[in-house]
Length: 128
Image (cartoon, rainbow, N blue to C red; front, side, top):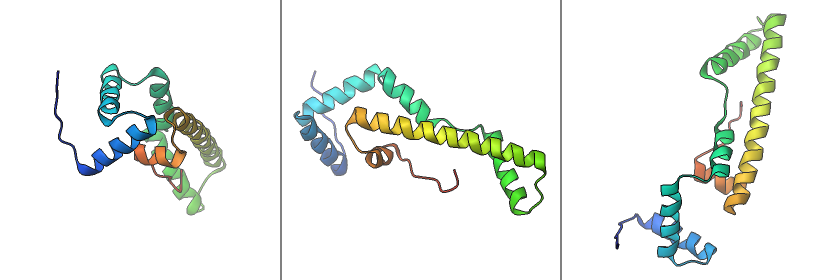
C-alpha cells in the first residue's frame, strides 16, 4: 500500500534529522515510527513514562500548598510541620524517581535528558 502524507516543514526537517541519525531513509524511519505507534509503546518505555509522570494526588498538592502558606504566615502547628516534612519527602522521592526514569528513557532513545524533556514538553518547576 502506498500512502502520501502532508507534514509541516519543521516536522519533515526533524524526521529527516532523526532518520539520518538512525542511518535510515526518511521513508523507512517513518514506517518504523508508525509500526511502533501501532504496536503501542514498548513496555519499558511505557513504565518509564509512568514514573516520569508520577505525582502527588491533587488533594495532596492542595494540602502541600496550604501547609506552605501556613508556614509563610508563621501559623504552622508542630503536627502540620511534620505533615509538611512528610509531603516534602514524598515529593523529593518522586523527583528522584522522575530523574532516574528520564535518564533511563533518554539513554533508550539515544538523546540527552534536556532533549528528552523538550520532546516530552517538560520543564523544571522551581517549587517541586
